[in-house]
Image 1 (spheres, rainbow, N blue to C red):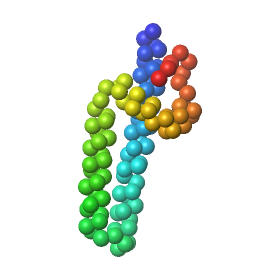
Image 2 (image 1 turned 90 degrees about the vertical axis):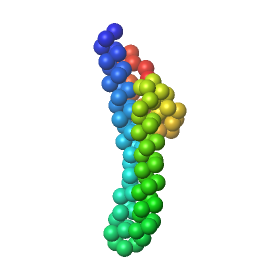
Image 3 (image 1 turned 180 degrees about the horizontal axis):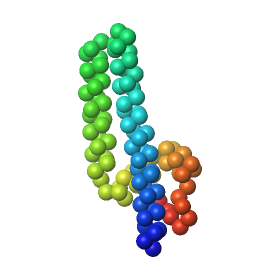
Length: 99
């Protein structure tokens, strides 16, 4: 029983970590690209500053999400059906473990 709980927790954590990584890429990759454009002179300071503020707001939402209970986080991720289906297909739960 203890082993199954530990295995479930590890699988849930892998799910949460992967989802968090995906969200961080969604938020930060455009900022990285904007910095590259700014450095080349293709983006104004004001545009970059506005994007930084937007990214900060989005990052606060992700942080707020990550402070919820583990069960709530897992249920939220599962509700993102397309992403979850792709992840679970590549990371099936261990035998006897159900998310």
